[in-house]
Image (cartoon, rainbow, N blue to C red; front, top):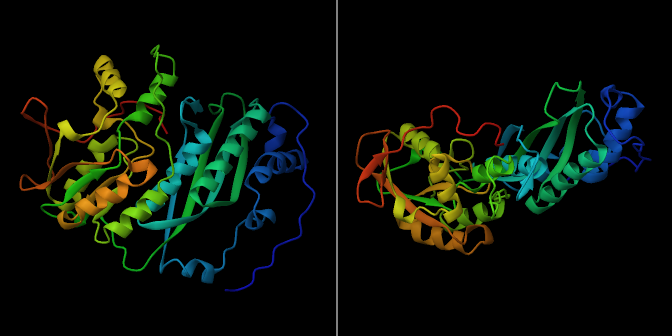
Length: 355
């Protein structure tokens, strides 16, 4: 491995006002102090320390993990910014880490760009940055570069975050929705719909005695175990906006296959089921932030399920259906009443600003 030299540690600025002002986005000392006090203090690592316009990673270091780079980006505009089970900072890290991991990559590095509304509390900004740092450590990634912009009051809703991730895909890992085949099993790693229900509940429209917590979590560890147990896995996707129903429709369309799932074995929290019944929502379309949908060859399904259930984030994993003979692109559900219903792609938006 090449030896990389890092700059000597420099003195850091400090913010001495309680709220963010337009000066903190102006490029001068106030901006430097905000970046130092909030983001560098939270994300501190050698690659970030120089605060150059880009982070530079040694290619030999990356090559030890695989032979292809994975690259993804996502923006987060969730409302409210803090919700049961997480906040916008944890959500931003988990969302990008999971997008890399479901593609078969080992997540390594993230960038973080934050748009901040004038008037946001500096202490709240520190809270979100610390949450991001803790989640990055949990996920085994480093936040190595970023950007900060401040906009006039009313120009955004407190804070928007964009995270971009880089990972490495090991040789031999080939995943794609088009790879689904007749007989393949459809697996999920636990209770569905918690994130969407948690966000709606946190908005205060429903007085819940037992608040539902988001499932927001980084899944790289569970996915590594799954890839080891089922090396010929066809495809993985994290069912965020649009939920499990949308992911299954994307798979069915890409592979030109039919998929059938079973309502009786699809894992749902009783509170989420009741929540959806009251509001007329379908839990299959609710967002998840700590779940995957995996398409696994039938001869590897059992060991895949065992590997998922052995992980703390997969103890309630289940095989919820399979790829079947039928109309290409069609997804159906066997209901608990013995009938079948079509599960279409989500049209419109059940819950805006959930991630």
